[in-house]
Structures are given as structure tokens and as C-alpha cells.
Image (tube, rainbow, N blue to C red; front, side):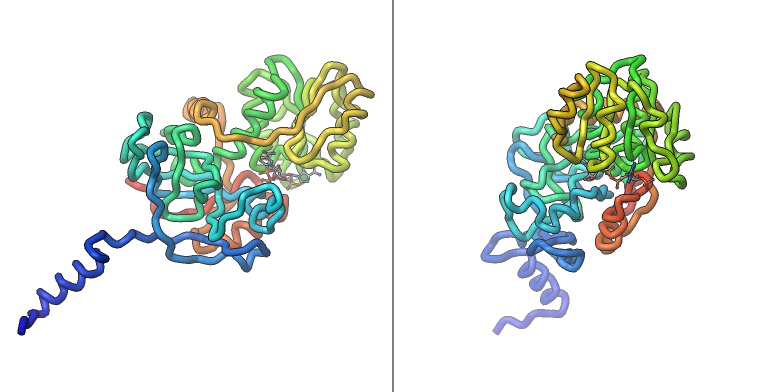
Length: 341
Ligand SMILES: NC(=O)c1ccc[n+]([C@@H]2O[C@H](COP(=O)([O-])OP(=O)(O)OC[C@H]3O[C@@H](n4cnc5c(N)ncnc54)[C@H](OP(=O)(O)O)[C@@H]3O)[C@@H](O)[C@H]2O)c1
């Protein structure tokens, strides 16, 4: 009979754990997972298989993940009718981290690169120790930012960029009214508009008036004390991130030929026609070139990142709870791992 010494048994046990019928055991990772739509209680911390990159993907070791209002909307099932649902699902569209592995067709990135990305949920999201991204979704992390700061950027900065630059074609010398200037999208929108050479009027509540000014707004409006239409008149562009009554009252402040872009509501064509203006509803899309351009503006100190709170990955519930208030100052970020040296 073969007798195993304790050391030998240990090696044998490790070898057994690493192999299953000769194959290496699948590595696992911690993630916040949902198995069904619902309230905050459906967010579960679990060990799940670590994803493997396909040919056109990179596997990122996530250091930090941004939290967006849309995460809670997806969790609640708001988009269930329109989206392909595959449970278990990992939420989180914003990541910053280090490339662990690249697929065979990837040319822009290599293992060890620092990246940030707006990842598509088709491949699961960023509330996890590892996440997948494509080259179209990722860009080099701005050197001047920590990973936590970088994770606060992609979705909201791309939304502001695609609304103001791609959709409304905001140009130097024009005036833009930015509703919700102190939120995730708004803080970037103010700075992108200023970098473009526009004059900025921005709205927020009393507590955030200082922030609007700090970000460069030429005029700040406290929407709890003042009707914005008493201050903002004949603007070239409105960026609406509030909707409802705020959008309804915005048509009248835009000059003829001007533009309203909403990121939360459909526009009323009758109102647009009545005022001789144009408008569109924007749905943000990943864009690595634009993300890289935003990264350059950040490294040139033309845009700064405002984070009000960070939470460990295990406290994703608290993070989503705060974001759901609709009154977040800047961004909320989940810290998944320590910042690499
Ligand atoms: N279509 C898209 O592709 C897209 C992309 C990104 C985001 N979104 C949506 O856009 C909205 C904003 O996103 P976010 O990430 O910026 O949210 P956020 O970080 O929660 O910010 C919301 C901001 O709105 C302000 N606000 C609330 N009520 C207001 C009012 N009546 N007038 C003016 N400002 C008001 C709040 O400021 P105070 O605290 O000072 O009130 C807060 O700073 C969300 O509904 C989100 O889902 C859509």
C-alpha cells in the first residue's frame, strides 16, 4: 500500500484541487450578482467563475467600479421588456483597473495596462473583481487620476460629451443651460462645455451652488429658490437630465434654431415646432476614442472628477441606495481592490 507523508498529502491535495479530470480548476472571483429583478435585497455577494476573454475582449482586474442611476433601474427590471435577460447578472457599466489578459485579436492593449471603460452588460459588469471589455469600450486610464477617480468617469462623461458635442453641436461662444449641474452627468457637462468655449448656466439645489461655480459655471441657479426661466433666456442649447416639469419649461428658454437634448425623456415635437427649435433624446454608447479624448482633457487639468463617497464592493447596496436619491453630488464609486503601486 502507498503511504503518503503529510507534505506529500498536501501537494496531492493542492494538485487535486487544481485539476478536475486533468483540467485546471476554474478560477473564481467575488462579485455582486442578481438572480432576479427586484429591490436592493436582490443584490447578493457571491463567488462566481472568473470570465475568460474572447478574441476581441480584454479581461480587466477591477480596482474600482462607478455606480450610476441606471444600475438600480436595470436591477428593478425597468428595461426587462427591451433587453435580453440572462441571470445571474453582474451590474455596473463603469470600471477602472489593470488588464490581466487579452484576447487573440486585441492589438491596443496588453497585460499590465491601466485602463478605464464603459462596459456593455452583454458580458456582465463591473461590480466584480474581474470584468470584460472590448477595445471599443476601453481607453488608457488618465495618468493623473487614481483608479477610484477614473471609475467615476466613463458613462457620465461620455453622456455629457455625446449630448453636448455630438448631438447638440455646442460651439465656442454659445450659451448652454445645464440642468442637474451637480450630478454625475452635470459635473462633466459644465466642464466639457467650458473647455469648448461656451458660456454655462447651470442649475442645482442650494447646497450645490458652490460646486457649480467651482466647476466653472458662469451663472448658477438654485432651482429650489428661483425659476430657471427667469434667469436663462435665449440660450443656444439645453441639456436636460431631470425631465418632467423641468423639460416642459425648458422649450421656452431656447432661442430660435437652438437645441434641447434630453437624457431622460422624449421631446415633444409640438413644443419644438412651436418655438422653432430642434431636439433629441440621447442614449449614451461606449466610444473609446471619445473616452481617450476626455482622458486627455483630464490630464490637461481641464476637467476634474468629483466623488462624494466611496464604498467597498461588499456595500454595493448602500451605494445604490444613495444613487437612487437622485441628489448625488458628483459620483459614487465602489472600491474593489487596493490601488496598485
Ligand atoms: N440617456 C442616457 O444615456 C443617460 C446616461 C446617463 C444618465 N442618464 C440619466 O440622467 C439622469 C442624471 O444622471 P446622473 O448620473 O447625473 O444622476 P445623479 O448623479 O444622481 O445627479 C442628479 C442631479 O440632479 C440634480 N437635480 C435633482 N432634481 C433637480 C431639479 N429639479 N433641477 C435641477 N437639478 C436637479 C441633483 O442635484 P441636487 O442634489 O442639487 O438637487 C443631482 O445632482 C438619471 O436619470 C440617469 O439615469 C441617462
